[in-house]
Length: 244
Image 1 (cartoon, one colour):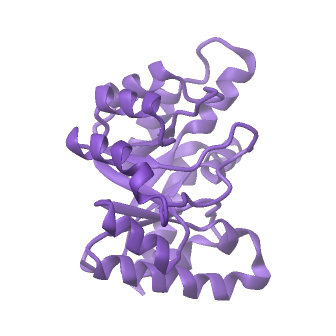
Image 2 (cartoon, helix red, strand yellow):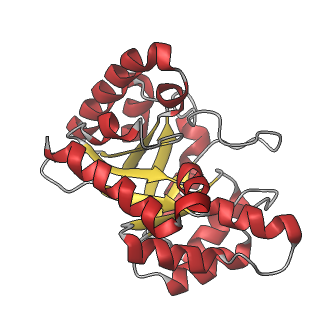
């Protein structure tokens, strides 16, 4: 499963964050998604949170209708979100942990030990023909648990790797070993959270990695150089790392 191109998924949540700060319709997340697609994004990611702090219900359907690349729908493991996913039918539903008070997703979903509890949610998603993706820590236990519940994809949390330079080398080894294990179990391996121009290359170079999902950094960088230029530079860095 290692002979493949590396895809870039662009998360457009924070276009909606800016829109919601003032109300109204601008800036439009759908417009951002279409621009990202034109700039080389291989997929669009959007997280519909319980409190609707950025992406709204109407955004999810509008994105699905507008884009021609796959939609990765980030969501909590709740009946409400599963209902929405089954109605919209995105390419993938990425299950993430969610706490109302957090600023952003703070870690991976705990699947190990909760397989029976989470199974009804996971089964509904898969029965609807949606690829099941689990945003998890790069740990052996969580990867085996993801395989046991029938996940199609694991997305490895890269937050600690990105945010703590002192432990970066150790975290990189942990992520690389987790990617190899996921691949050996037939899971498609993705990664995301906190990746930027400085941290992306080493993750992109992991041969078992299929997709990187990047949002906040690209949206911030686009304020200075434009969304198209920000995405094209990230795409180039990924491609260069993969070709080494």
